[in-house]
Image (cartoon, rainbow over all chains, first blue to last red; front, side, top):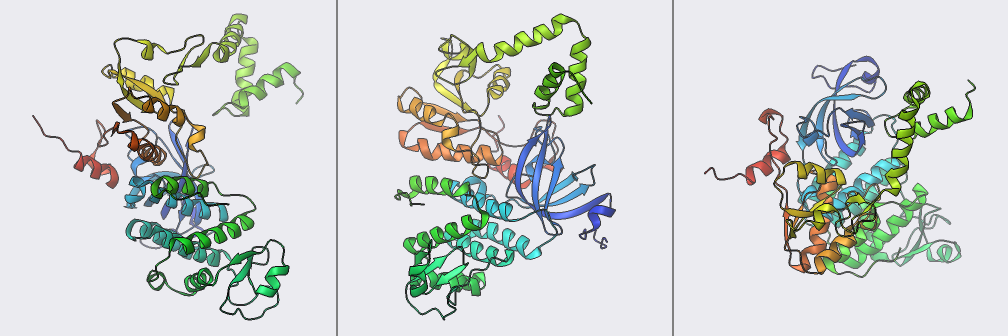
Length: 273
Length: 201
């Protein structure tokens, strides 16, 4: 089905020769003589690979529109096995993500998380919106850390890995306002009693847990009212990284870059991992 | 299908090359089998020398003939050693040399940083570049990495690393390509072309 404005519906890939999508470019890699293979996250069809012919030639009309972390409107033609980009137009170039090292690294992290958690299997408009919103928040918000912490929590929600933050994941008791533990294997917080007996459970402070709960329940505009201290941010980051690595069963590439870039930026001591 | 082992070996070797699939690999193999002996012998000789006959220039890390400490460009007295152009690949040196008007020397990184692919500074010749700048003879560094996300990222990283040394850091200009069309220009290129506009004289 294709609506009047030419917007593709999920099954359009199999029917139409040419279809239009809105997408964020996640990654690109060189392909053949002068082509690029793109990994896109589209509004209409979720993750999708597409081939941009001639995109590595300097005079390509498409190349500038197809850089990673660009939101684009694309006309795709059904190829033999993967779609081919026939037209491209930038909707949002997220310029600051290209110019500032720290923001660029955060954007890579955002994109890597999404890329690693998703498969090429159908649309998820909420994930698309979250991705586009997060990239634009990185460009406009004063605290990229807050945008990224909020993204992690929401992404876990949308992927079906929402951590349990209100009851003990082991005994079910309601979580009291005190320092707790977090178990990646059980997917949530543990009360101090259960936490001490559970192997691999990490301690989590009350303030960090409070922010995580707040982000899980609130819209971004509400979440953005808080100010994250560097210490709390670091604790939340370490906790999320621990949980995400557990779920992915493999380390992520970008956190090492983040640590390196921040170290030079703010002369922070390296964070133990 | 059963093929003699030497043929199968060559097909396998060819198909490991980028852009060559199993069909092309067998076609090339059978072509060589039927062609004159010297074609395959020349090829074999060339393949053997590609590793043993080359090495890295110890100054700019471009590819040079083995046994040389410095490449021709670094060794040339005509070149301005205080002007260094940083590029991703040896082929980019060739592209710049074709302009025929670059007076300085080069530094080849052998790749670009990519946080997502996990290509970090230790995978490139970045330490060597910092060392070269630290030694003090460099006045200006032209960051000529690709105008892509990875290239920009690498340039931004180098900028951050090299800022303390007080060396002049420049980035190649970016704008509309010769023979291009405004209609197809993307916002980020057009914006940079606008900000980098030049006085007509």
